[in-house]
Amino acid sequence: MANSFYRCFIVNDRYKLLVSGLGITIKVSLLAVVLGILIGFLIALCNLSRKKPLNVIGKVYTDIIRGTPSVTQLMIIYFVIFATINWPKWVIAAIAFGINSGAYVSEIIRAGILSIDKGQTEAGRSLGLNAKQTMIYIIIPQALKNIFPALGNEFITLIKETAIVGYVGLMDIQKAGDFIKSSTYEAFMPLIGTAVIYFILIKLLTTALGKFENHLRKSEVR
Image (cartoon, rainbow, N blue to C red; front, side, top):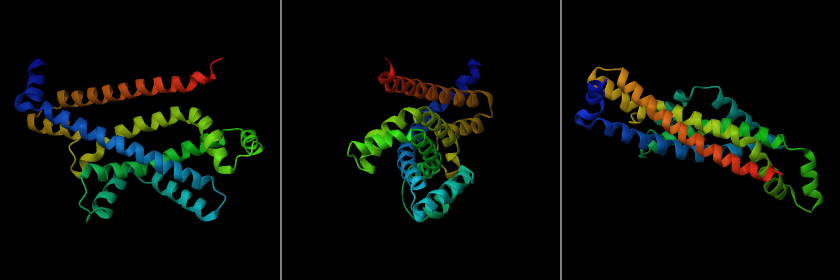
């Protein structure tokens, strides 16, 4: 085991590939999360809208994204839509994952908003707030507490899904592990090392999300 660890990670400083891959994974994931929230919120509003054009746009977007594999979407966005645009690979990959995540986030947000009792909207309007103010100051703060666990799970899933960025030539954690595997002809140690890094990354994120969720719930404790 010690000799295998040395050959896979120490010789030729191969551990640096995993460190560099971790940076790519984090960058892609963070930008994708931000884009996913923004897109998801807009699509959720479209799906909740009574105006037919907006409603149709929201449903078509959601159906297409949820009905096609994320790896196919990544390759279409990278090799077709952004083929002639000279942007960094990780930015294009993050856009692809953000678009994909936005469809799922939109359904989470939509369900969270619909879970709030209609009386809350009526109470806001009776206080003189318009529809926009009622949504911003009354509905969304309450819905956030309900949807946060599901959003956290979506972000965790998103990080793991970024393991496919190797299809567009990005050296993320998974791709770095594959490179070490092909260089050393050893599968066990590179794969275990990759799994451990993902596990630690997800565990840290889960802990942070749990603490933030507890902070949101403090106002409910009497």
